[in-house]
Image (cartoon, rainbow, N blue to C red; front, side, top):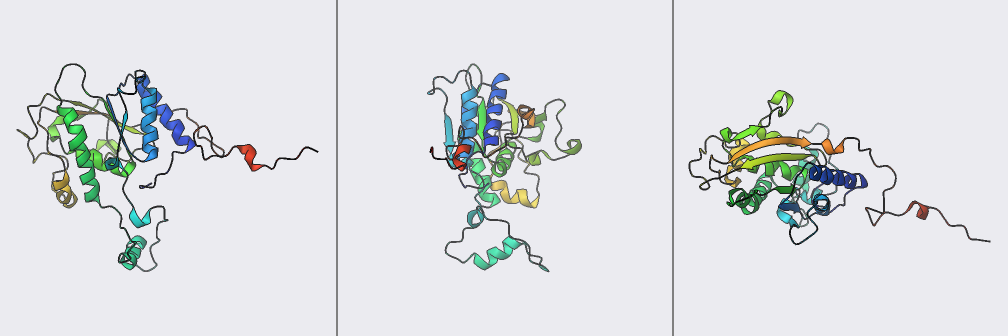
Length: 284
């Protein structure tokens, strides 16, 4: 987790290969692939690319690695265990530790929600919105965004904030949460390689014109959303529609057994072969 550049596990590699093969077999043909520049996201994105049948000319489609899509930075707490709450204390262990060490020169605090929202909105504004608004003949952009659990939740909320409530719909038979009552902005929490599939259609005259800024998912007035609202991207014209087709798609994982053993050198150059754990006997 966090911004530590940890590799995929063997199980993770198998999952990414399954995902790429499944999406390619379903007819998905990407025009753009964006990924966090952390290697576990890059390897996942490369698996999507490798499965594409028309990717032979690498100049036509490449993985665009972007630091703005990195996971939440846990600062000083990267790679450290959670600090337990002290007995008879109403303060969490992490908050207590922060109070004791936040003046240390080497202390770096956990990245805030506001910072993540700004990063997500920057990506939306600079990379996603231009593709949504792009006019031209033929098939529109088909975009893959490969990132990490926490930042993806903020990215989803930034995307959702661009749409008026009446322009967002769920695919037939799709519900969100238990009984479909979970607010759309909280539909995150995907499994490893679980995916969110959105169908965005547009022929808009521009951004913001005619949009009702008081009729949104995230602009509804809670304390948290009011605090984050300034970081959210501009509202799209109501002629831009979004259909949520899949939430936490995991069909590609059916029948996949958990990999066992010490790992595989096929996927991880740092893995040793099993023979290396035994001493070789000298021939007499």
